[in-house]
Image (cartoon, rainbow, N blue to C red; front, side):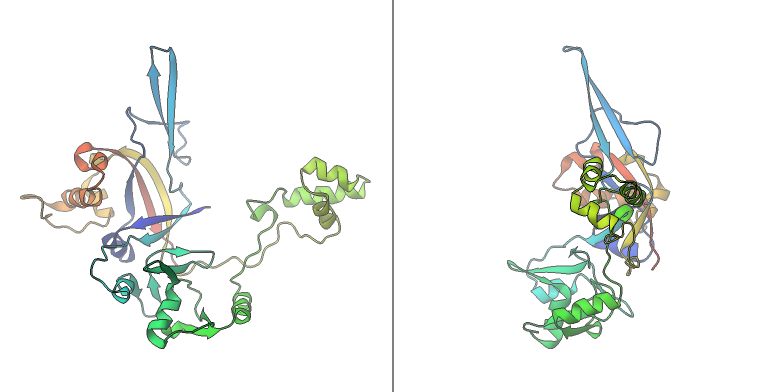
Length: 322
């Protein structure tokens, strides 16, 4: 399972939080010139291919797309797109992207790092959103760290914040199991698996030199030494990092189609409210409203607008309950 970021507009964020949005469409980039088809018929891979024949040279060229947001089972961590900030103070811009619940006040904008702390820009300076919230409510904390009582890194509720040192922060992370150590099978960067580590120990006990084992498994000899002396426990991890908050979406399906193939039912799943768009003189419904919303999002990219009927990835998802 992989996790990828995805940006949603303010209206679509509200629809996701209310459970009305379970689908999103994103244009293929670049747009294919011919009808793409699915390779190998495996829907879980989400690979699409376009063949382009060049008779003059007697050969065939191809271009392949894969959904950049993942495949069924992967998760999306959504972030709210920044609206226009013209004429607004930093504090007004800050509160425009804060969603208050009965517990945490969730920052809906950009986040970064393993802890997913919110990030906020004031001029050329970037600051953590929970630290900025502390400044608003209590003043400048100086050299002290602003820590969370809750485990939601993007929470900005002042009641969930307190001051501490780096030592306090590390202690809090350890006690709350907010640190993961990935090894072996659990770490995508690891060169060997747990079974290979067991095999290394067996071969070493059979008399194979560490130097030869390092060459065989393409690792450094010092790593072989740590494995055979049980100083490196491959494949063991601490408790899995809990996923808190309401910003994870699990992908349930991906397909490719033309934009105008969207049906009324699917337009409703896009989070569209039933109304007559201002730009349309007559008619209404979810599909017509989706058309107006789509064009408003791609005003500066005419090649993706409704009348061009671009190819799009259709991504279905469900909220991850926490």
